[in-house]
Amino acid sequence: MTQLSTPSASSSSAADHVEALLASYPDFPQPDILFRDLNPVFADAVAFRAIIDDLADQHRGQFDAVAGIEARGFLLAAAVGYAANAAVLAVRKGGKLPGTVLTEEYDLEYGSARLELEVGQLPAGTRVLILDDVLATGGTIAATSRLIERAGYTLTGVGVVLELTDLHGRERLGTAPVHAIMSI
Ligand code: AMP
Image (cartoon, rainbow, N blue to C red; front, side, top):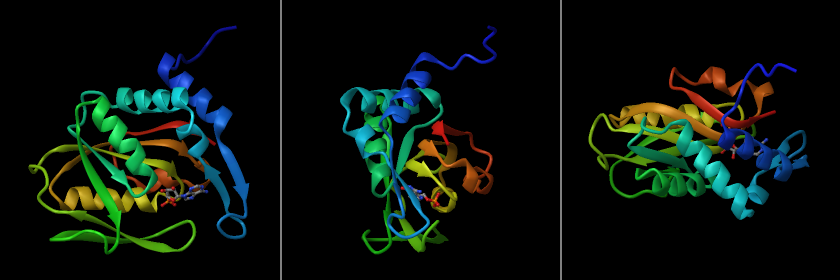
């Protein structure tokens, strides 16, 4: 049989790990939400290394810093930043950062929220890769993109472990390449 596309070895292996370990919880944290839990992926050393390598490899050479979104994005950003010799930015929930901060309000699949970023941490024009665990409606990553651009940085990519395609979150994002290890 002819193979039409050939994913890279790390990509296919990372996706296999996510598919095998992903846990799903209906009606959590509220009715009608099917919660996708990636903690079993993070808790498996081989799977964790595979997803970190995949996220770093997909955007290699295209970023100087990674921006992790609180809280699960922090796990990814710290590891990818280390693996790629990149700086790490923490995008935090509202009210947790001192000093001068930029703020963005946004809607979630369930509820609304506020994200913040400290200003002046890196030079203007720094190339930033945004990382988070799940791309759902896209509101969280779209808000983070606005923070990155308002801070004077250049958004060069978005990486997530899991994309929930029926929520069309990708359509809310800009032109920077979006890489999802697995889409369902
Ligand atoms: P969104 O802004 O809708 O793309 O939501 C993205 C953020 O909310 C991510 O940080 C996810 O951790 C979380 N999230 C939203 N929907 C889900 C879901 N169905 N399962 C797990 N996490 C979710």
